[in-house]
Length: 494
Image 1: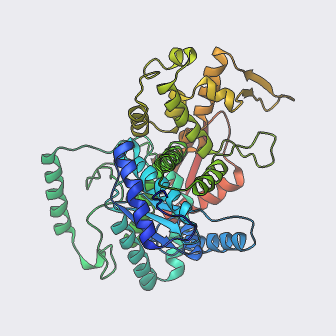
Image 2: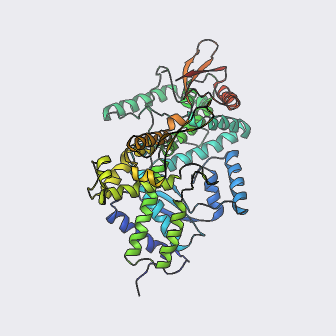
Image 3: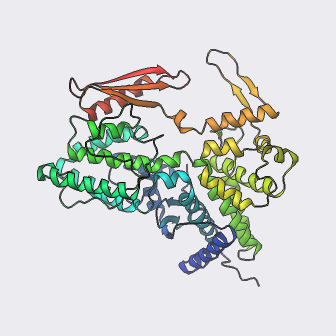
């Protein structure tokens, strides 16, 4: 009888640990993955719902929107309209993976391969995560944020704090640095900055002006790689990060309100890379779990029944509805990401003449692991699709491009399956994953700090599309609440 890791659906902690070690050996030795230390936790369905509601973070301050999300997700789950995720994974060091206690042992193995090694490797190695997030600092910062907001509620009142959080949350997508890159100061400059900051804090210290409520101290490390912020610096315009500008320059905000804005924008910046990497992140994790589970089956570590259960789940995850299917809501990121990564392996191992023409840099090189690791490290969704989507996969997904003009009565098919069409389809699809075109591009262009304190904003319209008027007025109300004075927005053609 084969020496299987497990033979039935029930799990216990010894079996989970034994299976984890087998998965780890394949991930590190066969796939050469580079991961943070892992922390595996098995939680109940209610705890998983709670994780959903607080943007999948284990520590989070209180806000009514989290409770609303919890109530909605719980009602849908109890009524059988939606299922729970098998896992939630945190970009931290150690990397925390939550597994659902209702999972079978096969599913526990699958999600450990998916989260603890697929997502984990991607978090640690992709350039956007490396530039913008601090995996070692996020848990301490979340603990600080939770304690800080609670202390503010106790001192200043729940309604006062909630009003600031409401406005900050409304501006989260406009509270990130999109194009500015974090500085790489020399050691001497870093030490000089710390010396000047300590000197400033010593000279400016006054108990009346303390930002933090009593007993709450900030963590040593930020959750993000912070932009260099010198004291006494000049206002730089235009500024794309609205929360940052308001935090630093609002004439009316109190110290605790500025710190609250800083918490929200730090969390927004922490999550910003994930919005640019959904296809790659999920594709990487899905490809890794598929490869590991098949290697485990090939080596006699799991039974045929377990492999069949895994394949049933996997095919459901990568299912792509047709465009005429009622379930179609665009491309499934799991399906597109996994399909592209599986296709890269095919091109490395068994390329066609078409593949060699389109991808001469890696077609037939035999090193699919190295090629994928390079892609995982150095691309985001937009550039990954632009560089690696093959004509074969476009045919498999039956892709074509439509030219749509608002005043026209019909659609026009503008790109089909020929050489020029493939390139146009690929480019058009890549543009859809550019977060910069999906979010409105709003900048601070002026602020009358010495006069009537009016704040001036501009919106560069993408393809001539203005902001939705009702939503615009609601969001401007939130900006005015934080700024404390009039706010004027100009919409202009890009």
